[in-house]
Amino acid sequence: MQFTAQQIEQYKSRYVQLAKRSVVKGGHLDFEDLWNGSRPLVNEIIKHSKMKEVITISGIFWLIKNSLDQLHQSHKDIGDFKFSEKISIGELDEAADKFINLLEGLPYEHFFYFRFPIKLPENLFLISLTNNVKIVRPKLAEKNSFVIPSPLSSLAEASLGKIPFSVDDNDVFFKVKTLGYGDPAQTSAITILKQFLYLVDASGLLTSKSWDRRDARLFENNRYQIPSIEGNDLQSFTLSSETALYISGLKLDNKKFEGFEPVKENESHTILGGLFGYKNFEDFFESKFIDGCRNFIKLQNEKKAVDRDHIFSAIEWGFDGNANPNETMGFIQICIGLEALLGDKDERKDQNQRGLTEKLADRCAYLLGNTPNERKKQADEFKKIYDLRSKLIHGVWPKVTDEQYETIMTAEYLLKCLVYKELWLSENLT
Image (cartoon, rainbow, N blue to C red; front, side):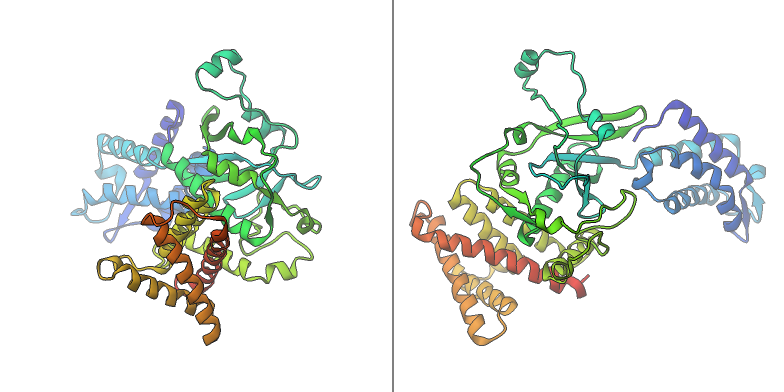
């Protein structure tokens, strides 16, 4: 992130003032004095709107402490001393420059907007799925920031491959907040979108519909913004046709929002988190779906969780399989999702395909079945799925036939069941 020259001077001036008054006692910085003296510098930094979610106030305090600790280390052979007495102006300026570089190295906060062709109940502008993922109907100020007049004519824009982007009063968007730098942050936001669409679609909160009426605007460029010093730096990107088609095949179940109480944007109430802005939803929120989604959110923040990566990978493969217009390739992607969820990283080295299928089928059976009969039924269904997968991959059949379509539906349903069971079990594994 970049600061203006004026901001840099303010931060550096505050930093040098703080450093000059810092005191070392017993070989350590006077922590209490440093904490109190840091407030003017911290206040200057948090005025910068981009910093609010990128780093916490306490995080800024610790950055300051660590920076001054490094300065202190170069004079640690000296006893108790005040920085202003022992450290030169040149050293202070150099330390201030390093501190500014550290702040500017923090990632940008991005807001991504994906068009979503549903209607929200009247007077409802926000549904918070998590603190970082929302369904929104942009209010006037936000809407106006989307549409930037272009000096180019429509013909010139078309020749450059630029698709017009318009926002109507009732347009609804998925709004995803993430941190990062440029394209990698966009990729991260699309991954988050796919994961949440997959989970929420399976919940019944969003229901599938036929693709008989596709919203052409889904294929326009989607947008994201990077908050900048002088406003919003808006950029556009194209969503894949598969993802756009998947989104066009969803609709909001309005009946589930009859008791909705809109929450304020600065509150942390979420549908998939722990606090809710709802009435009359007892049965819905007691479901395994909500238990699984709470754990999904925990796993998002717990990057060292042992079961995190294989669950996330399975969810994304499940989305890609459901979204793929080619049923055969979509089915194979679903099978990859099953293997990502049930398999071990190095299993393929030691087993043939038959042995691997038996092991995956057993894992599936014991995850979903409660009795011997249930486990046998689950194992048999899994083997039937993998038998079809093998014949497709090895060219026995070129594509799925109408008679085999039921097997595809079984695979999609099985993967969703396994994902929620694994999420539910992950409660004790984080």
